[in-house]
Image 1: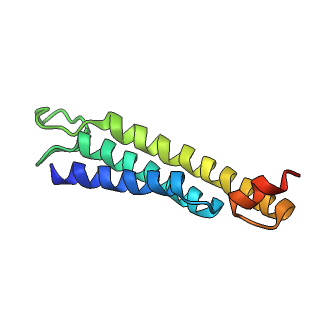
Image 2: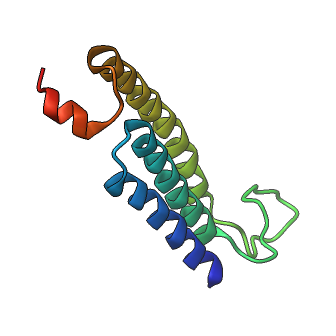
Image 3: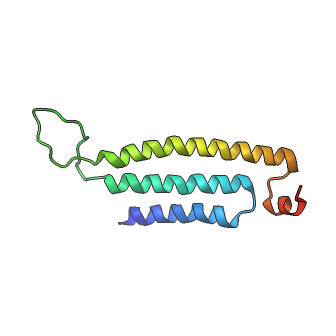
Length: 112
C-alpha cells in the first residue's frame, strides 16, 4: 500500500511543478514526472506476487499470470509521451527565440 502512496506523492510533485513554477523548462519536467507516476501506477496495479509472464505454452497451466494490458498501455504511453515531450521542448525553444526568456510572467508582459 505504501508503494501506491509513493506514486501519489510523485504525481503531486509533478503537479506542483506544473502549477507553481514559472519557468517553461520546469513545467515540462513536471509534466514528465507526472506522466511517469501514472505509468508506474498502471504497472503496479497489474503486478501480482510470484506472477508469470503472459506467454501461453501447452504444458503449463494458466495460474497467477500478470495482466499484459497495462504493460501494453504503458509502452504506448511512453511512445506518446516522448512525442509530446519533444513537441513541448521545440515549442519552448521557439518561445525562447522569440522572447529571449523562459519565464512565463515576462512573456505575458511582452504581448508580442
